[in-house]
Image 1 (tube, rainbow, N blue to C red):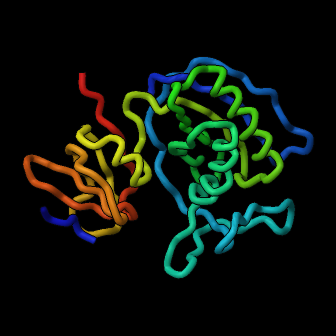
Image 2: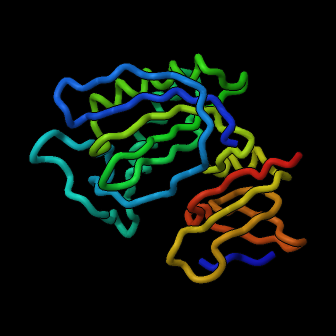
Length: 222
């Protein structure tokens, strides 16, 4: 083993947001939705050590990243910290989320799951709860659309437990930019432990640091 250097055909509930317009709280428009995979990560300022939700007016954060003891805090990090407990309180797991693009309108896409599976009613329930929390905390600047979806066949993988559950399955993994060496891998998941994910690519086992993984998804095999 060597160490690397250093379906979306699912249900979704959608809600449009414009938190910057006083009194704006559009009703959700729920429908079946087929879309693409993750939009990717981007940097967003947030205070170290807490949720750091932005306040209205002059106290709003300036654009750009900040670093907490060497770690860049992203909008995705803050949204996961804010939303995961709310989703769990409803009996679901927040599997992954895609944050809106910085500096303009976009989509906040949330993937949820539970043992019984996910239906449209589940998406609507989570959408209503999350939308209310976002309206209060207002962590996202500008306009955005909230989508709540089941993970789909190409389900995202974010945590060690996600990788362990899918041992033996084929996955595509993309590492963060700016690090030396190869960024993209496609191989069978061997396991995950102590912050490392092990995959097998063309008969060779490769260990990847979970913190270096930008995105990972299962590859459906038919």
